Length: 271
Image (cartoon, rainbow, N blue to C red; front, top):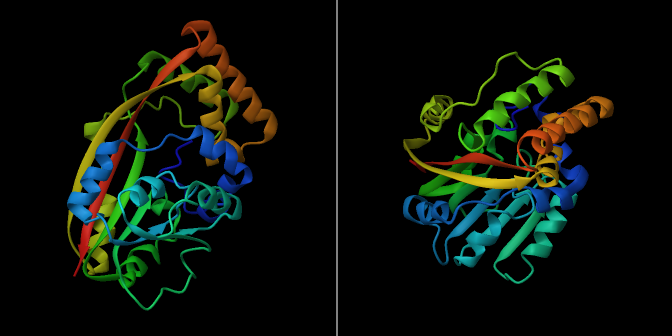
């Protein structure tokens, strides 16, 4: 049920489900901690006047803070509904263009970018294309900045352990006994290896931001309804799963649970 590590056999299909309810996605999904954008400015140079290509802009969760910092942004988003919400959110910023297209086939403009930024989206792009095309889009020394959003151990720990039984009951693909990893145990070696294999980038710099967000029962169910794996379940199984989780939150946790997020920034410079 993890959106950050999609099965390659289903990646292309699942990458399109977010557009089924763009308004729900925009309402339910969290944004990013302010410190992330401080790190982006430091490591990737995303300050005033920086030309940014954003890959997989979604509804503009990262685009708006970058625009507020004075970046000039071309934001590429596959989903027409998501792109429409992003345009509405970014209407006040003349230096932002939202393009409805898939990054893999979108023709790069002649002028290179100072930074390519992809927030909670890079893993949905074709692995055969994403790193090399990002390099092609950058000027020498430009930065590829990939933001990963991960659910890690913390928050209401007992609830997440108990919720595993709901997944095992309603999703037969669930491996039994799964537990959330500690933030310190998150492995970035696959991304580092992909960057190294391309031969187009220098060393990888990583910054981590752990933070907690508390949800009411309905707010948490709304978040779950935005996840690709949940949306892909047969409707009866999905509604059974959500009812099981709601029963846990209301029955054992007073109608509120806290989820711990790890927002991880991975930056490498083009050679």
